[in-house]
Length: 294
Ligand SMILES: Cc1ncc(COP(=O)(O)O)c(C=O)c1O
Image (cartoon, rainbow, N blue to C red):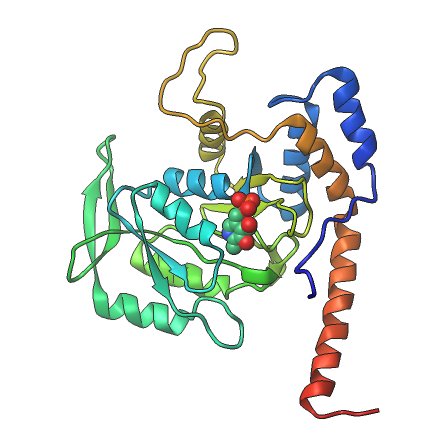
């Protein structure tokens, strides 16, 4: 069996974790959490990065903040990990699966566009603040399309320029499941920086790992603040137990962020090695397909 990816702990992980243990900063606040967020933002070019306890939590919150509501449909490719669909279901929404392209394994954008053209109409609804939002609804059921969740599976990216144009036309927000694509780019722009939100996972089989962990990426300052607020139980006062809405305990702990900081220091090397291994695999497969024998 060839593992998808295994953790590579060969940098400053021990030193930074020891620092957390020595200083007692092991829990949900601490300098490594901030540093890890800064490093992710700097590397991807996202304006803001908010740490979360895992990629699933990052997806859940991102979709909530993108406005996905109970009863909505969220369009997702039919090759993904169950977490994408679980996060949609946490909000009382339902995944609507679109087939993937056989060459890229990404959502087939021809299918998506013809689906939207044939099956949807544009309708307006009003927010609590009285602003009108125009969104696509499905013709037959009238259900709203809450978001599109492209999944950059195994680090390959969907054509984000084309997807963005489709989503603008149909007024559908994009939340990127970029959990498997740290370091992937489309025309020089990083995965996770095209949609309202992008998401990262630092599970054991990801490009970098903190054991478990996630990140929400966004260019919107207000949404970034809101994401941070909701990951920390929606607490409004650092000392008093005042909470202004239903929040979550979704913060990444400092001790895991410390591992993340050490992993980020090694990320360029990891990516170089991955590319090298991909080229070797490609060459070997080509030889096999062409019946090459030594
Ligand atoms: C495509 C995809 N989405 C979501 C997730 C969820 O991430 P996590 O395991 O960090 O919750 C993963 C990875 O596990 C994934 O591969």
